Length: 150
Image (cartoon, rainbow, N blue to C red; front, side, top):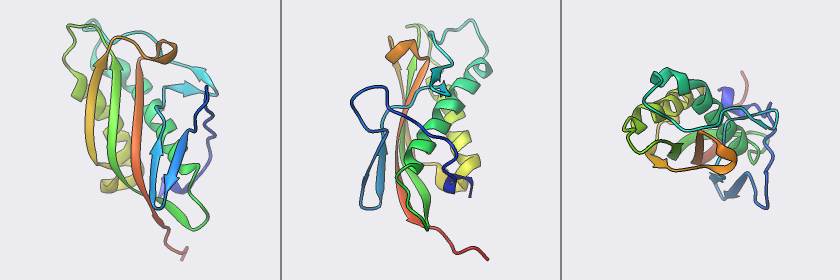
C-alpha cells in the first residue's frame, strides 16, 4: 500500500510532535495544507465557490496527516486502518456543507489505504485555524505488520 512510504517529512511548527505512538495506535497533531513547509491554502470556506475549489487543500492536509502517522511506523509495519478523523474547516457562519468537504479527506484516505482508510469522522466548522489555514485535520490510526514482499 502507498501508506508504507515515508516520502514526505512533516515538521512541527511549535512545541509538539506531529505524531505520537502508543503501542499500535498513532495519534497525529492537527495537519494543515502545507507544501514544503509553506501554508498553501488560507482563508475561509464560503458559499461563493464550488466545493471542488477546496479539494486540493483538504487532500494536502490529509496527505500530511498520513505522512505524520507514517513517521512513527517502523520497518516491517504500515498504517493499517484509520480509526477516526476530525476535519476542522474555517468557514463563514452561513456555510453548511462541512461533511461534503470532509469527504475529500475520506476519499483521499480511501484511495491510499483502501477500505481501511475509512473510519469514524467529525467535520467541524470554526472561525479560524492556525496561520489562517482553510482546513486542519487530526487522525487516529492503527499500525500493523506489513506483509512480506513476494
